[in-house]
Amino acid sequence: MPTQPSASCHILAIDNDPTILDLFRDLLEEDGFRVSTQPDVDHDLEGIKQLGPDLIILDYRWTHEDTSWSLLQLLRMDPDTKDLPIVLCTGAVGEVEVLAGHLARMGVRVVLKPFNIDQLTATIAEALRGSGVGTGELTAADG
Image (cartoon, rainbow, N blue to C red; front, top):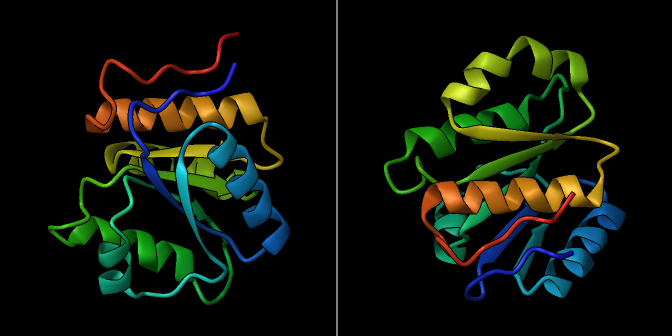
């Protein structure tokens, strides 16, 4: 059963894999979300603010460039985006386990790749409920 947003919630998906971005767009638009995609992590906070997403799905890559971590930190330090729900979608299991407590304190939810669609939509629903977007009218996938 798909997630039912109360209004056209806007999700920004950031991932370096165009196939994953297409998958996010197809799945989330089918569930009634408005979806914007960005193929690369950059540090354009103003651009993100102008898009005005209700939630960000961030491909969390652990590379020498550290761009995902930097963007996450910038989002949390900026007064306009500090409370924006973020779902990290990553295959970096070991790194996420090490940072689990820190990510939880930052209010960041994690979905590990390869992800289960129901888990992803349930995590999005939980994040949006926690932020007050669609409160009382957003339901997660059953069982």
